[in-house]
Image 1 (tube, helix red, strand yellow):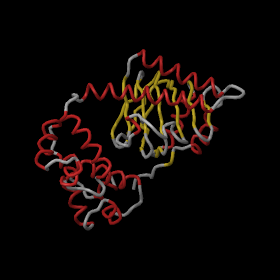
Image 2 (tube, helix red, strand yellow; image 1 turned 180 degrees about the vertical axis):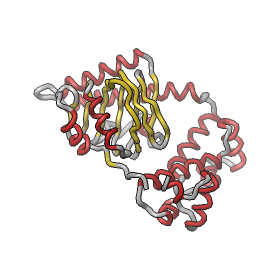
Image 3 (tube, helix red, strand yellow; image 1 turned 90 degrees about the horizontal axis):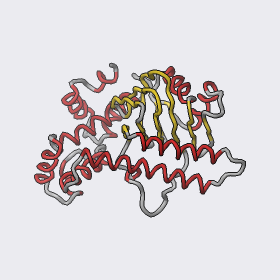
Image 4 (cartoon, one colour; image 1 turned 60 degrees about the vertical axis):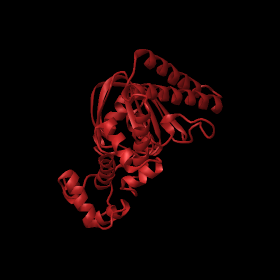
Length: 297
């Protein structure tokens, strides 16, 4: 079985940083948040790469790559995070570092405590429908984000700094990430009723696929007939609605097989299959491998 993920949380950052980062200008760490500032990120990520284990992110991460190229698997999807890119991760994300090319210069924030959005309007990227994103943004956005993180860095190094001021800066950072994501999404998906329906459908699938495998559930939640929902999803994406449900279910199964010690029986139960035999047949039909064959690869 592949190695189980290690929690990449406050404790792990503290442990890794104590062995890799000697420069106090590279990392600020406290119980509520961390700020990576400068070339210390290079040593940090190379040390983590050497551990050769997947990492479970149980908090929010926002990163800015100013220089370098990081190749990793994020939630089972291969990603290249290159110069001029921003990265956003939500709790529950699984990251498997693969390689770091060249010198790495990063800035970013990890939030271990509460986000500054307890009431009122909440950014789209925090509404529960998004697991992660990596975006290449324009140089002006990079400059603005860099200045904002720099302001957060300077603030926490004042003799007496205000938590309220820090949370305001953090709020501004999150809203800017949200704006970058919204602009990207508007280019990828045309702002039409059908596209909006597709987005709502995918959010429901990501939230409920473990328990709900049938199109009828999603059509009911969207107040549509199964036929109408199926036609719209196929027109927008070129893939049937049932295929989207099955893909999400397989992704959940793969994470459990790769990164937990649950038995096939336990996974079948967690994913609401009638019995392990049905689960195994479903998994093999979509992947050409049995669950055990996939686990032992």
